[in-house]
Image 1 (cartoon, rainbow, N blue to C red):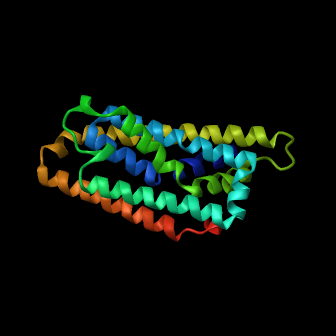
Image 2 (cartoon, rainbow, N blue to C red):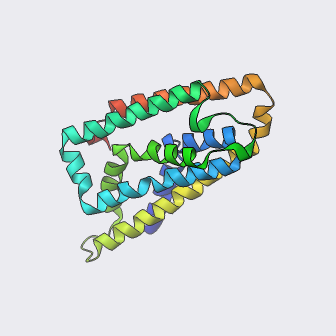
Length: 206
């Protein structure tokens, strides 16, 4: 069961989502330091979702259509704002040739916002983790916290890998203005697509 969890969690972490996309964009636009900060921020944002799952708040979110819709559309609006600011080359993902010019605060705040305003993460933890808790265990809470901690750690490692890989290609991208423009617009389009996917999500599809 442990190896099944590791393999499943790894596949989920590697699959690109909003956090991975933000990390890649930050690394390409601002460098390795910003990419690692983005990876850290996106990872930290999963912790409240994990805590909500283990404390039962996820069940409340899943049961309450109004609460789910409010959080969901807040996430949709945030992703659309990210798409607009990326398209205009402003905000935390602005293309900047100088690594030292990156704003730590803007990258961290934006990275946390990307994953925090996603109710599907809470419901994901709520539905995913219990599958790997041994049946009849007297310490199911400890199991869920432990498995959740492993998942969070794996998320950071994968996102950090994305950041370093993107940063390694950064100077080659910045040397070609047309490529920079296409990359920026490509990331903006991806944020729009992800916002559309989130808008179409329902509580039962986690």
